[in-house]
Length: 221
Image 1: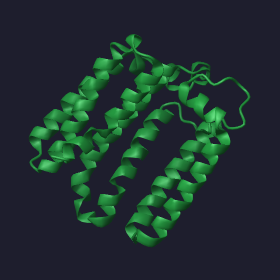
Image 2: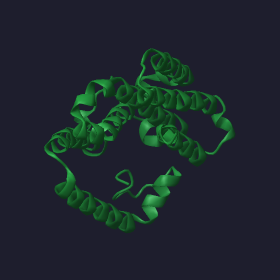
Image 3: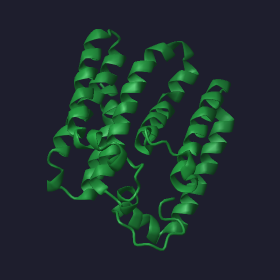
Image 4: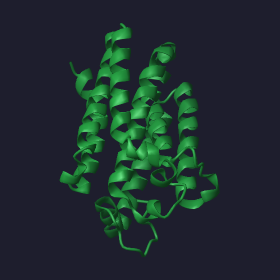
């Protein structure tokens, strides 16, 4: 939504068009969700959750500032897509870590693997959409890391294979499920990327987002 806030240029993607047409509605919805989250946080979170949440909030703030307001904070070797992936993964691990801090060591590799999946998913979206801002920015993912972009499906496959190996090495069933879930999504992204010209950009983005929910499917069984 911040991409189109106070923007007079024509939206280039489906999500930007939705946000541009209903800016006030989305601002109200965001405000309601923020207030709800704060109320729940003050009533239910423990000290560990507040501490870790503060770190994630700080990293998120840096991302928004670098992306939308302060270009000086951008780092060429660390594109925003990778930053989003790691921060999102950390946020997903917050609840488990805050309730069972002893399990943190076991969470490190699954969290990093899921973070890598999130980063690759964001990278796919950037490559598939190719908005003007990224095309003209020398520090963007598609310009600064063109070798990575040109071999995205290979990185997908590499992540998938690595996660399958880790699933064999580690014994706890829950950890194995996490690795297998990431592997499934990584292989699916590779398959879709090699055929992305056959799908619309909106559908591709949906595929990329759905791929992040595979851990939920496996943990149901």
